[in-house]
Amino acid sequence: PRTRGASPSTAGTCGTSARRRGRFLGGRRGEGSAHSPPARRYWAHDSKCLARPIDSVVLPEKAKSRIVDDVEDFLRADTKHFYAQHGIPYRRSYLFFGRPGAGKSSLISGLAGNYDRNLCYVTLSHKDMSDDALKSAVHRCPARSIIVMEDIDSVFSKDRSKKNGDCPLTFSG
Image 1: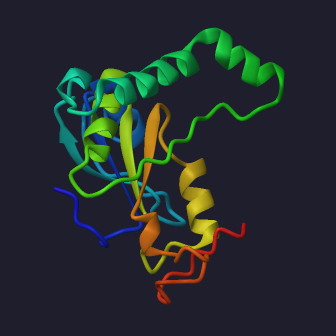
Image 2: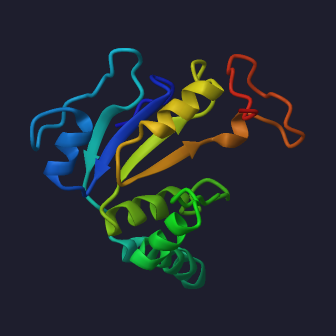
């Protein structure tokens, strides 16, 4: 299980192939070893889980299908070509919000399993999570991954004032 606050970023695999797991973790094929770049540890392998079927995610069907349809559209080859042709970084962002237990994490797990993606968690409120650390972690994220930025509301108030004085993150670049 994931330990909150232990490191600013952790990665886990959810229904991914052993070949890709070994590559992003820096181990031999099929091995789940931790990967630590010499200068700084960005992603640490935390756990493996069975892929959750997207059909098992309990959400209003209209909301779930809207997101799944958008992901399907984004992953099409012609969409990737359009992004490249227009010089747009090929990435997609979503902001999920709601009360605890509303299905946000379940949906993310279902999407990771459905599209054979790694799940990478970033704890934004961690004391070592600066703007530079976040930028580096995102740039060093394993290929074919979903980055989950957790508890963004614990860092800033609605007026963007700092809630957590121990966290150097500002989002100012």
